[in-house]
Image (cartoon, rainbow, N blue to C red; front, side, top):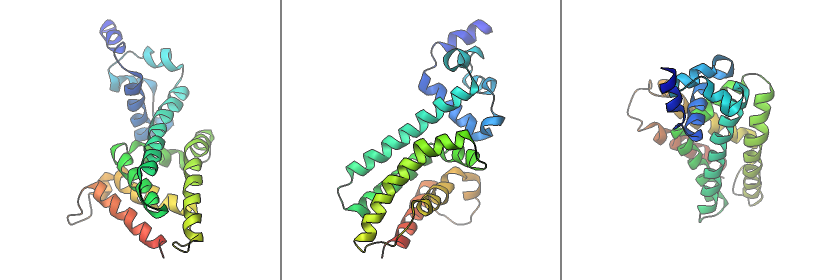
Length: 203
């Protein structure tokens, strides 16, 4: 049994391992997740994570880096691809955020776990991933406000409305599915929420 697991371990890519780890941390939080559980999900030897990362803590940081780096790249690409003005660029960024997090809801659920109380992991997520996104959004919002096209909205307000409003629809599918009526897919509902937020910003 041990030999077969070690054989499987050799073909598990780093990206696959980190994706599985991100899902595990999103499901159970840092304290509730064990390296053994991550390896069980992958069907590999318990030694694999220790050989590659050394500890659960380093695995967490590596999984976060991969997941949020991908999100940041997608948002930057959406901003560059937008052919419209600042409002169109903001909408493209927010919609791409919804699309990516609908595909990887673990990103939002990780933030939910860590944001419940202060700590080093929350500091890391905020300093390296949330704050840079806020700074970009703040420039766009201030430009729109200066042009008289939008209300003055803080990046924090935008974050909670979109990240935990529209984002909550895709990160909490059990709850979202309980509302009666045909609301389309979870992504459709999240996009609708983004549109509602933007209509509240624009004057």
